[in-house]
Amino acid sequence: MKVELKTELDEIQKAEQQLAQRKNAVRSAGIAECRKLIKMLDLTPADIFGETVAPEKAKRERVVYVNPDDPSQTCSNFGRKPDWFKKLRAEGREIPRLQ
Image 1 (cartoon, rainbow, N blue to C red):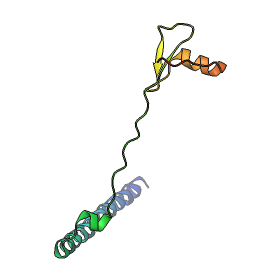
Image 2: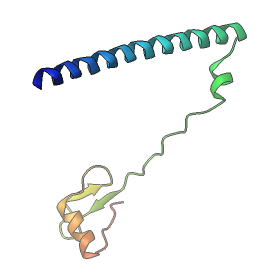
Image 3: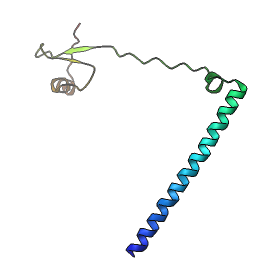
Image 4: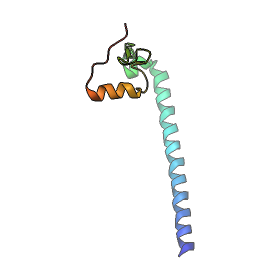
C-alpha cells in the first residue's frame, strides 16, 4: 500500500512537471507571435493598452492629535494609535488637533 501510494505520487509529480513544461512552451510561442505582430504593425504600448495615465496617489493630510489630559502626548494619523487615543475615542470624547 505504501509503495503504491509513493508510485502514484511520483506519477502525479511527473505529470505536473510535464504540464508545466507544455504550458511554458505554449506561453513562449504566444509571446513570440505577439512580439512578431507588434513589430510588424509598428504598435506601441498605448496602441495595445490604451492611453492610460497612472492615477496620482492620494496624499493623506498630516493631522496631529494631542492628549487633552497630557499635552506632551501626541499622535498622528499614521501608524498605530496609542492607548490614550483609543481610550478617548472609546469614551466618545473629542480629541483635539494640534495646529
